[in-house]
Image 1: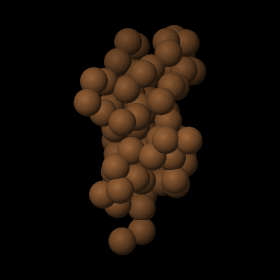
Image 2: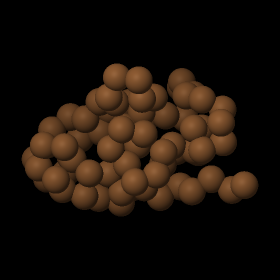
Image 3: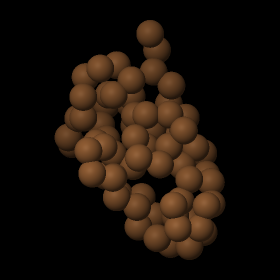
Image 4: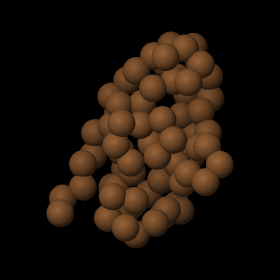
Length: 70
């Protein structure tokens, strides 16, 4: 199965949504909302910001490889 690489991140502070391309082989731990400038970190138990705030989990999770550290 081919991984989905586009995910819509939703800021928990202001609700702003932005579609982002996810890295194929790593997890993204920090993301700054382009609207309110809040720095997003993964929720406890999630591997990255896409798994916490995205419409699609990151590619490593989609392929059952687990979180990949860079």
